[in-house]
Image (cartoon, rainbow, N blue to C red; front, side, top):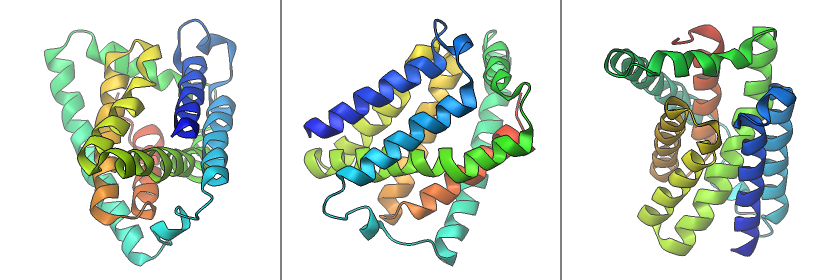
Length: 206
């Protein structure tokens, strides 16, 4: 478990650099996000000495279908949440708009490729395939799920953006439950890819 917490601390440090007001203006977000998530995924696979990640299944038609449907459901949840929050919370619209500043000056299709080929798969390999699986194995399914979701949301605290932290908590819980339900991470990978591209490139909700 020591190696797991070392990886979590590395993730927290990487996300601090990505999102904190003291560092985010000094770095290029998309290269740094690819580097951070890529290293987390590679580290997870290097520590997976028993080959448990490979046992979580291969991509197939069922995984693609589950991923597409679940991504659509999650997008609708976020659309509804945005509609409600921007009417109920005076700060919500401004915080959501600030999240989308990471798209400025970058070709949207480049963003889509980075999300689909590196960032979303790497996040699922690390957060669900490694962190959640390890925590569930040690503390049980419910506690492991809750703890991994809390950590996933927690590394976004550096942003001091309530809407981003809430989005991370909802997304982490959603994909964590999907992982528990399917016992595979390919549906989660497909879901994460499709949702990322929908909400950041095709139909942003700001």
